Amino acid sequence: RSLNQEWREKSESTDVLSFPTHNFVAPEKFDAEAKRMFRFQKHLGELMIAPVFVQRQCDSDKEDYKEMMSTEEGRIEFQEELDSDNGVNRAMATAFTLHERTPLLLIHGLLHLLGYDHETEEEWQAMTDRENEVMKKFNKQWEKVCNSEGKSHIV
Image 1 (tube, helix red, strand yellow):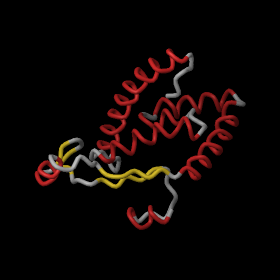
Image 2 (cartoon, helix red, strand yellow):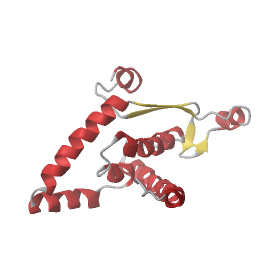
Image 3 (tube, one colour):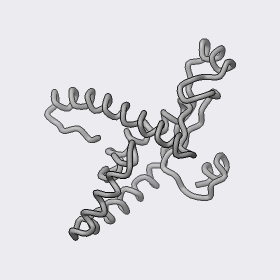
Image 4 (cartoon, one colour):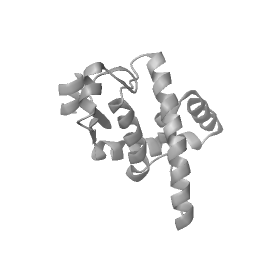
C-alpha cells in the first residue's frame, strides 16, 4: 500500500507494481533516448508482487465465486461478468491460488514495463488484447511442459 501511495498516489493495496526503466512513445516503442540506452542496458525495469495481498484476493474471490455458483442467477451473473472481461482479469476470475495468479500478474506487470497501460478504454483494450496473445503463447508452452510431466495447465 505504501509503495502504491508513494509511486502512484493511490491509497490502496495492489497486487503488482511495475517500475519501468525506460520511457515509451507507444506500447513496445521506446523513445529515442531509451533506444540508445537499451543497446547498452538490457533492463526493462522492476516488478513487485505483493503475495500476502494476492493471497487475500484469492481467498476473497474464491468465496465470492462459491457464493455466485450456488444459484442459477449467480452462475448467469458470473458468466456475464466473465464474458465482459478480457486479458489477465478474465483469467484470474477462476485462479484462486497464489501459484495460479503469479504467472498472470507477471504477464500484466511485464506489459506495463513495455509501456502498456489501462487508464483509458483504448489503452485497456490494447493491453488486454496483448495479454491474451501472451497467455495463448504461454499456454502452448505450458501445455508442452505439463503434457510431458502429466500435469494440466493453469491459465
